[in-house]
Length: 53
Image (cartoon, rainbow, N blue to C red):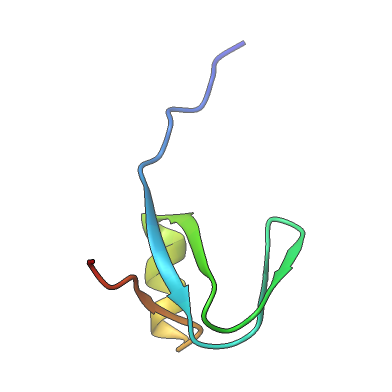
């Protein structure tokens, strides 16, 4: 059995309420997603990159 390589995760801030990995999140929540998921969320205006502190 081969394992999938681990994908890098990044943090985004949700601009809208969203379900991810079976859990509901409210706008403003920060979640960790893969880079392709981040790109999809940003393209569809569901999230924006998390602000650096």
